Amino acid sequence: MNLLSLLLAEAIVKRKHMALMVTPDGGIYPFSLEDLDELNQDDSFVQFLEKTYVSVSLTEIIKKFISDFDIKSSSNKLMLINEREAQLIKLLHEEKLESLTVHMDDCNVIQLIEAKKSYDKLDKESRLLDLIMKNGYQTIELKTQDGRIVQCKNIRKIKPI
Image 1 (cartoon, rainbow, N blue to C red):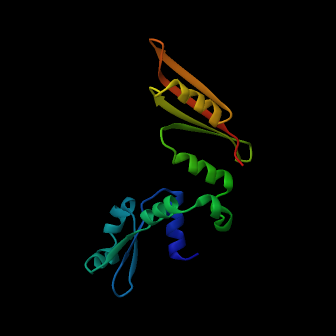
Image 2: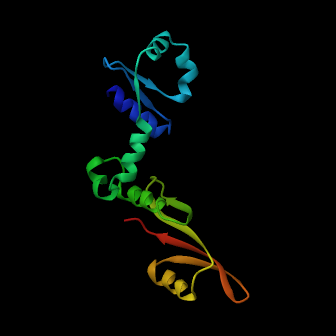
Image 3: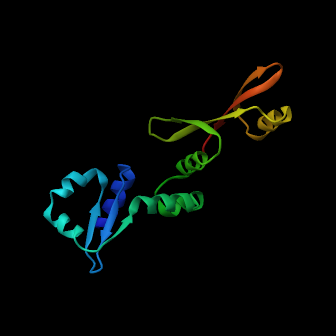
């Protein structure tokens, strides 16, 4: 593995902010805020900071790649995540999502996902019928006040592909 692969793996696995500092002559220094105290004691790092350099955030690149990338169509090509994990990531981007519960088997394979959404004051009672008809298996909790729905919680039960 090369240095870039190791840094990317560390950023993804440890959820650590990682950056590469690059000088015009091609010098490279990996940087992480968590390692700053240790780096400040390293003379080569202090000398590196005295030069002109550009900082490239690997964490931002990864974040941009994941948010812009069509994960579902390319998950098999990249072999980074499987289709069930891609489906889970897609659910994380839904609006009004209150919580996700993931049920896994003994082999850590996703078996069931419960996506809980909360709606304050449904516009119309017909919106409730839309919720029921649209999402398949689910649990719907309603709170009413003076005969009107004031809060609706919808827990969709999704069997991954």
